[in-house]
Length: 170
Image (tube, rainbow, N blue to C red; front, side, top):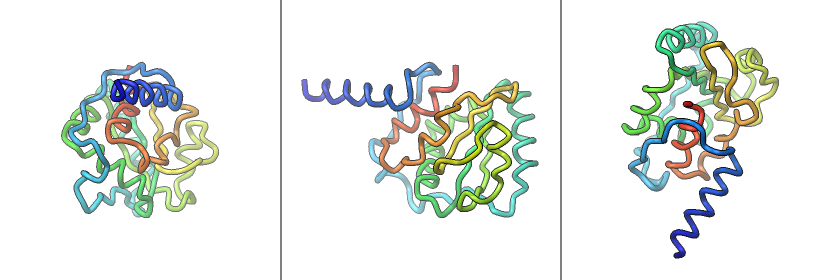
């Protein structure tokens, strides 16, 4: 009974935080705790990358493949960004993400670089990193109001992070 109650409360809290789930079912994540992630955590952000060109190429690829564009805004200094990158590299999550998204990683420094990219989608100021922009094939932001929802990834479960990624894949 306690386990059922805890599961119901966790589901309710997730729904309150992110709204009701509307996308494809999330993959079942093979680990229960972030402590089980492989170390060292990835360093996915490249400060020398041409972010505008990378986003344009990823959008074209997403559109051609009938997928969503997932723009991951962050920096290698950010533990939450690196945790999200590690979750997205788990085989079951990577397969799900690759089936639904084209991912492009954009280094925003300490929220002082490449800010024209989120601004293009109506995000005037980042409220934390990682910030994820989920963009449809018409260039519209699907996750408006939830862009910085994973900025506290270290306090979420691996399954909670996968559930958030699945939410937008209707």
